[in-house]
Length: 217
Image (tube, rainbow, N blue to C red):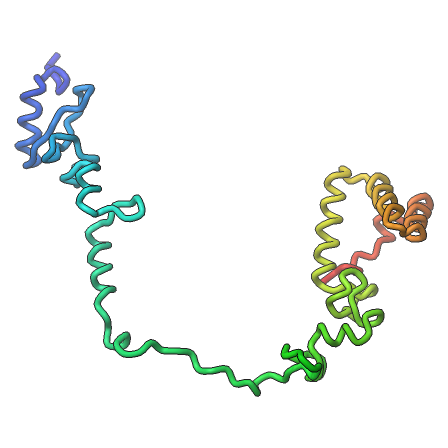
């Protein structure tokens, strides 16, 4: 059996390695590998870097904990040179035309009007909250295309709450509805809670009797 690189003396291996690469080297602590040596006598992180990490950090090539490559430095220098377009005062967007949108007619309100160009949604709801407001949040306008008039934001929140309740109850309709009825009683909604319990007892809450389009967006 011939002698491999492990059998060769480290001095001979180091001399051959330096002659091949053209720069100084040093043996690793285990003696199996040869690393590139920095001018300070420490090992560099790789063959392409002539300096060790402490010397490289001291040279200012690190920014925000990362080493700046040569091509990145060239890119930064190119960006620092002003182009003909950048010379002169900075460009500003054109001023917004105040007459582009109709404003709310309510005194002291400068929001954009939505309802036939007369009132903003907030002022329109404030005129008649019982008829125009969402029955849940009482802030957004009522959606007339839905049976209960629930706004899109509240319908999304109800769907999320229903999904969480269904997941927690393990898909058991009786447990979920009983929990809803209990919450309704605590919220002084005795009539709605009794209706829910009566529908649950009568079996009217089967999947074929539920109108899934009530909360559809």
